[in-house]
Image (cartoon, rainbow, N blue to C red; front, side):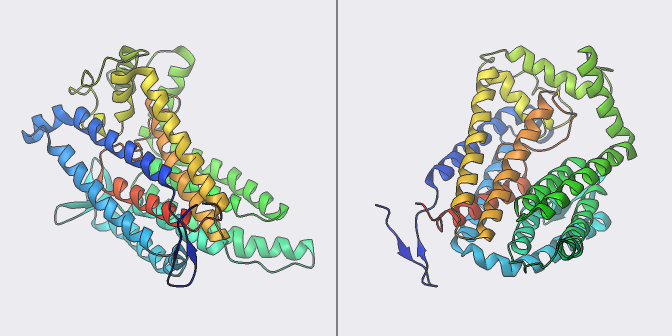
Length: 391
């Protein structure tokens, strides 16, 4: 029998989802090991310290765990009151980073405060999910006619959602960061769609999907380097060979070399060759870390990792199904989908199922903002889980 305690508001609380916490812990620890493995060459060449990046990663994990503990300690229902000011602050940061952010390789995505990087686009992921969940969880009035329902849905839901998504997604796209824009838009659409109560909402969601697909194609066409990535990917699908392996196709060529050399069982832990400067800049421990995992641990290691992410999604959806209210359902479902969808997007790009995206692998890739906000999301999931109907 599960031990229960009384919350201050008189609500009965149970234990959090222990399996989810253990699973995330395994992924984070494994990620620390892989960041060390994949970053040795770059850290030694640039900083003269083989442990430079892994030490920073450990700091981000500790900071993220503290943030997760803070959001876990609150009642998740209190987050609804903070969602609007948090959304305003996030939009302001997304705007300010375009003006005052540090430019790296033609992109303005980061603030550096006291040497600590802050990426507002990463913060936008959980904050936007929280805001949408708080808004869409509110009760709707009844309608006397289909016309009234259509008018209400178009003005108060569909149009409002599109404006919000356009502002947040547009600011991230201008950085430019198409990969993060894709994650934000797809996850936001998933939260919006899952909040539906009737056929009118479903039809509106379908319209959003069609419009979003069209805008995505336009966004790709606006930048020449995105078109090059798509062209390289399409040529690979058609011919089975990488176009311009020393130019636009260099990154995917090196990734595929690493994966192919790993085979089914892998070369063994610590035996990667692609980490020694063959991948572009520092992507071996960021954008291409899944390729390093496949090189060292083979297909079997990749399948195990994919299975862990599938299990993570199942646990998150289980929390959502058993949540005591619609806010908890949307919040848990949205966060779980975000964490896993981002991971699958990274993996798909690393095995050439989609064009190169530059998206980090959740819990595993090196990065401060991405690690902290991902662990924040886990804290919210555990928060909702202790309010579950089923313990």
